[in-house]
Length: 394
Image (cartoon, rainbow, N blue to C red; front, top):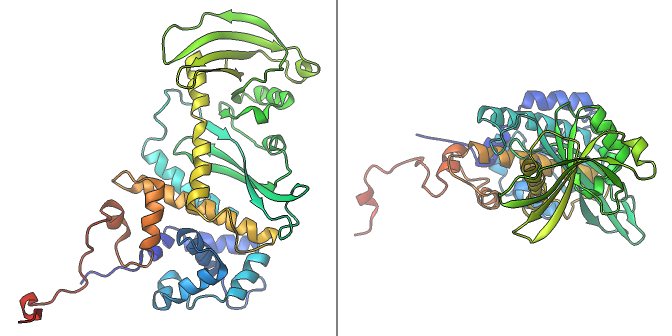
C-alpha cells in the first residue's frame, strides 16, 4: 500500500519547524497566545495565498472543510475568523520576515547547486531595485498615507538575478520616496545594481562608487556634464551604439556630490525604435554589455506582474498595518516556494500554470514531486481490487 499526505502538507514540510519555532521565540510571537499557535496562523495565511482565498471566511471555511487532514498540517482544528483576525492584527509581522529569510536561504542553495546565472559571462552579483504601489482605500486604511484622497503601501524589493529571487524587501507607506529606501541598502563591493531614473541621486551614486558598488541607470535629459573621453563605439550588434563617453557631472552641486568619472552610453534600440541613454560607473564593460544589463532589469517588472496576478496581494483580509504586512510577507514567502518548486521540477512550469494547478490539488493525496514532474498522470492506487471483472454488472 502506497500512502501520502496532501500536497499542501508536503509543501509545509519544506519549512523547518525547528527554525520556525526559533523565530517564534526570537520575536516573542506567542507571548500572550492561548491555544492558537503561530504555526497555525502561518499555515492559514499560506493557504490564503496558495488557495486564493478572498476573505477570512473563505480561509477558515476552506480549512474547516478539510478537518480530517488538518492534523497533517500541524494544527488540530481550523481557526475561527475572530481568532485569525486577532492574530494577524497583534502578532509581530517581523516573524514572517524572518521566515522569508530562511526560505530565501533554501532557494539560494538550490540556485547555487544548479549553477546560478548563465546569461552573462561576468562573475559580479547582479541585482535590480524598483518599487510597486499597492492601492488601498484611504477610509479603511487611514494609516497608509499616499495622496490626499488615496491610500497605498509600497513594496521595495531587491531582485537577485541568480534565480530572479527577491533577496531584500521593504514595505512602507505609499508616500515614502524610493531613494530614501535605496540609501539604506548595504551592498557588497563588486555588486552591479540596476535601476530606473526614479533612483537618480548623485550623492548616493558618489557613495556607491566609493564603496566599489557598480550601478547602471538611465541618464536624465536635464543632466549637465562634460565629456572627458570619447570611445569608439562597436559596429554591428542588435542595438546600435551611438556614443560611448566618459563624463564628469558639472551641474549645481552634482560635481561635489559625485566627483568621480562616470560613463554615458547612448544606444538605438531597433525593436522599439527609441534611443536610450545609460549612466554607469563601470568603465570596463563593453557598451553592449551595459545595454544588456539594463534590459535584464525588466525581470523585476515581470516579478511584480507575477506577484500581483497570482497571489493575494492587491486585496487584504485585515485593515491594520500589522495585518497588511503579515499578508505581504506571506505572499513573498509563497512566491519563493513557487520558485523553489519551479527549479526542482523536471518540466518547464510557467508560474501561472503552477499556481493554478497547485490551487486545485492542495488537499489531493499525491506525492508532491511525482505530481510536479507528471501532473496529469494518475497517482499510484491506494488499493486495488483483486478481481476487477467481478465488480462489473452482468
